[in-house]
Image 1 (spheres, rainbow, N blue to C red):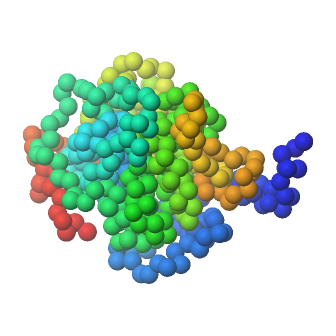
Image 2 (image 1 turned 90 degrees about the horizontal axis):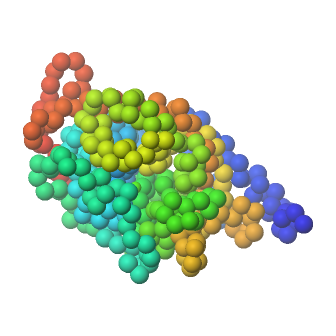
Image 3 (image 1 turned 180 degrees about the vertical axis):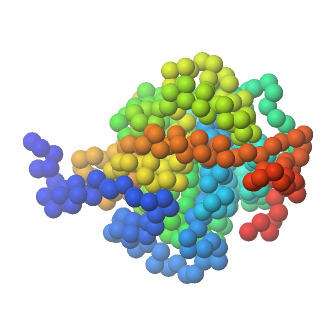
Length: 406
Ligand SMILES: [Ca+2]
């Protein structure tokens, strides 16, 4: 019996129509229509007053990261775009592919490499359930430091400057400050975001949109046989986030899409990106050296792909909307994202799955962004070359965060 016969006709047809979501057409497109129509059971922003930060045309962004090699790619990509029409107002760190302390250090190294100052918040040092929630030790893929354990990693000029508030409180503070304007790019386990929404549920109405790297749409795992790494690290947090932010568009880039349409060639990584000669690429080459020496067949940087989807909406060429949740109990499936493709549960869609990306456009964006960041690092000083021969000396080497940054 066709599955549609098990469901009410009107509901099934309605969901089928919603499922194939037309790809957004322009860069930095105004997605206000999505806010209104995405979940008809929730009125978005109904309690939102005027905000005190960000212009109408500006994209205000918070990045939540676990500080691994591919997070570094994503950060450099986002930071390059922040020179145009995007303001990164905070970077929150979380336990994941390395410790949260290493994540703070690695984010600081990225910022130092290109002389950027962004407030950094230290977040959760373990999953919501701690070690009892995970049966598998941290993978060695990114090394013990998250940056591949290179012998000659650049030293930080000073101890990383970290905001006084923990990451979850930082998320709440920025969500309230930029009501209705804040996009969150989530590149690691969702522990910080889950804690933030539990501490202050109202922030679910303040977020403009969320882009998540995590989960799987067809049961293909990269951590266990059926779970993707970021969701596996903290399945409870992933479930909380999926169930609490249906009032805004939640884009998810699942692992299968990365495998299917976001894999570059080894040659592109080594001979196109790898030879750009910028400080950003210099650092990326160092921290990826161990990985690149082992894997020669393809190159996938999933964290950068999801950031690219945010920056250039055309890159996510196919999306589909479903109700999704996370398996918490299975012996083999803990952490697997459950995608209700046949609308069995008859719940409104809470996720926009990115099911295809335009590899050529993504690679062009990477080349432009990483090639653009032509900053030069000499000892502890950072000089910036904006245009022409004039050199500007940055006022501080890096990350000496001014509390009045905003
Ligand atoms: Ca990550």
